[in-house]
Image (cartoon, rainbow, N blue to C red):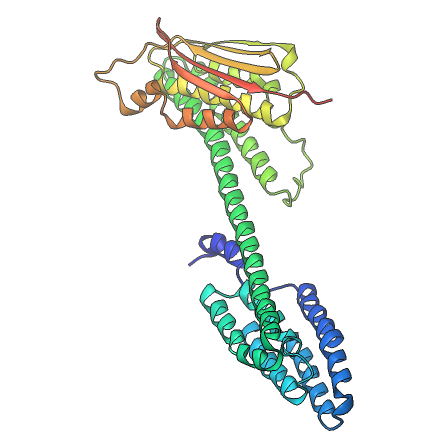
Length: 396
């Protein structure tokens, strides 16, 4: 399997694996180590005053627990076993140390196991930690048992909370990746579909007049070249936007500006080159829009013009209006194409007429992403209309 096919799984699995950075691993060791030394070590020193022979052995077992915590990030289950056995040894040597205190390192390890291991493994670890409960009852009575059970359950619950938090972060990452892929797909569709539609029409026109009017054919071919270069430029900008780490063009040439309403006349010219009459009306108030609204309006107009070229029967004129009203940008694209009849029309034409074409779905989604709305459909007197309302908050 190649790298590209594994990449999404690797991204999502990264949050579930226990691989940590060296800094995080050190923090996971030093924090519990100081806690065990400060709490359990002090308890052993105090309780071992009257047990001269046992105190050094108990202190050594405390050090074993501290050293075992070094591998807590890599092998939490094995560390849990080691520190639990060592903690029971400390309690057996010095009964004055409570069982809850003696198993403090084990409770920390249980928390990590609960956070990083599957539910079945963490449940097994919890059950194992509950086995010494009768010892806690025998040593401290109901109060000792309650304290021990509470400490163990809280440690396991803290791990489960951390696990749920990580799962939520992975879900957010997965959703962000899906949304980013959808955004890339929309951008590529808008760039390629419009350019290819114009190129196909120009190529057909060049073929029709190639022998009779070679100059007109050359002009059509020049439009094809210009459109292809423009599309390649937009795709480069798109890749640079999604990959900011890409190096700048070593040639140092001036990069073509990205798509926006400021380039609306250029977009109309590409459609005019196919023989379509395009009327553009854009108010000056639409200048200086936020980038998201500006791009959404441009792409909606681009897709509407593409649909006119591809699907509008006998259309030879299209009107584009971009105005403002009540803090919103109004985008309207109307063609004079003949409304396709139910008999003899293609499935794709039917989808567009019904408002379920992929292009229309993409336009509606673009409008919704900026908090706006879009409607599209045939007009009573013929033709097709796309009307979008995009709210905008002025930048200072």
